[in-house]
Amino acid sequence: MHGQTGSGARGRWTRPAAALLVLFLAVGVAWQARSAAAPPTVTLAILHFSVIKGTTWSGAHHRAGQRIAQKYPNVKYVYREEVGPDLTVPYAEELIRQGANIVVGNAEFMGLPLKDIADKYPNVYFGSVVASDVTRKANFIRFFPRQYQALYLEGLIAGALTRTGNIGVVSAFPNVQVLRRTAGFFLGVQDAARALGKRVNVYVKYVGDWYKPTEEREVATTLVTQYRVDVLTQQTDSGSPLDVAQQRRIWFVGKDMDIVGFYGWSNTDTVAVSFDTRWEVLYDRMVRDYLAGNRSPRNLLYLGMRDRMTLADGTVVSTVDIMNNKKEGVDAISPKARRQIPDSIVRLVAQRREQMRRGEWDPFRVHALVSNGTGLALPGTPIPAKGTVVKPAGQMPTDEWLLSKFNFDLNGLNVLK
Image 1: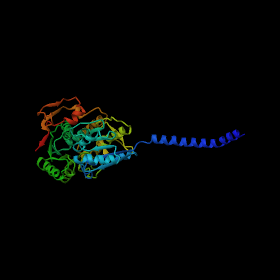
Image 2: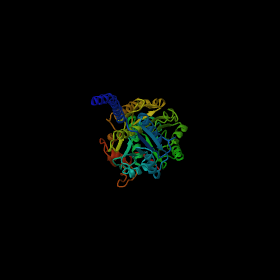
Image 3: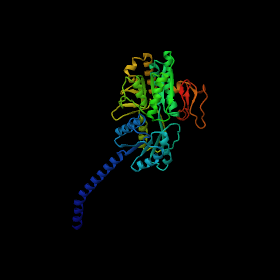
Image 4: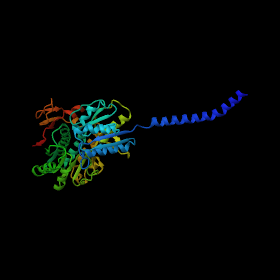
């Protein structure tokens, strides 16, 4: 009887306990499943070499960080402004202590120091824009957009627009990044001039740095008054050249961002077109690799018009494109400017853009690259003599060569002292 009673008592109390245990186990399994499914939290930290407000370069990087955070609910964007090379590592380590997983320098001169701490933080991705050094490590990613593709399209438009036959470029200083981008623009100008049977001069004058508003204004004014340019563009970061173009009532071609649509700078009566850089396409690759747990991500990213991502609102964007007043492609050409451009050039812009978006055409593959004898001597890479065919037509240079060895102006460019 005792055994029976004990057995019955054991039966009466064990079944509820077992049910409760099963419930606890089920909850635990469900919690573990949710935890396993929950994506990790990532913090993207961008170190901006300049201020953000009023600049196209850091402004575009800042917008990219915001767009990444909008797309990924588990990704946070933080930043620091006016970061020089002496502050890169201290700021990076501070942000890592605060949870940063991806730390980027948005210019090479202040981004390169990140390579020195990459081994110390193997679980962090570091990145730096490329100017000419392509040093990289497993977790030190180098990146740049193929802006020259959109600049080529801008060159077609500028070459068709000029009536004086003179186009001016307010530029920072000779470096591979600037020389390569100017080359893309110059090839577009030349193709437009050939197609229209006219002669067009392109004048480049340097101010000595990226952001020197006073000097940029002076150089822009010199180009307009002394060289009779009626189309002005820049390879600098302030709004001064645009101010001069607006005051002098000549056409302006923008860089890095849709300066009318995103910044509200001027309007399409002055801005014929801009090119828009979507750094978020590059950052998206880094974020996706990090979320996937990739310990050896692709560490040289040179993405262009055929590379795209979908933003949080469903908009699909290429890494670079021509843009103006929030319109893309040939629709980005100012309505006022379009009335001055022959239909044949508008069709050519549309054709080349679509070919580049499909990866079927590239100005640096199609054209020969012939040295002007000017540029920037690099260690082990002197400036090629004037007339030297550095790269024949029909061959595509490697990414590494384009990013690190393109150290000369193209033949026919007028580089002013």
